[in-house]
Length: 136
Image (cartoon, rainbow, N blue to C red; front, side, top):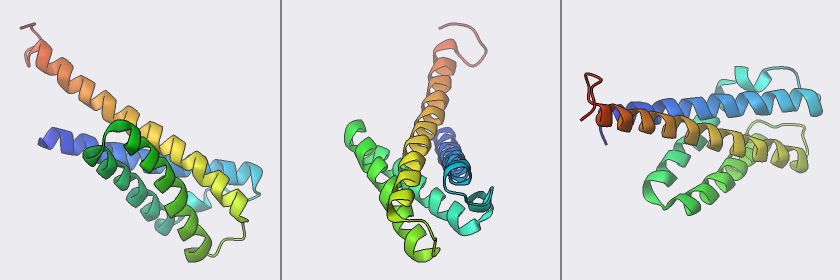
């Protein structure tokens, strides 16, 4: 993996974790009467989100795309939901937690894939056009 790809991977993981956590925080505020931005302000929850989306990157490196997407979705729902229920001692029911983290998994996965694909396309376009902007 080139240094550029490594940086793109890190940016994609961080973006997926932050945007996924932000969407879950907003949904928790609107539908579950949670205080606004409590999840985003929690260092532990951000760390769980970073680890979860980091596992997405591992899955996409070690599996074909479809099994990686399925593994990412179920990891994105299961891992944070179990940690949320038992580690952070939330008052939400299992149904609410699973719904919120299903949304997290989808949003974080889409964000991760979008940022990763966008960075890869820019690299390929730069290689095709040449570094000085002229076509090969």
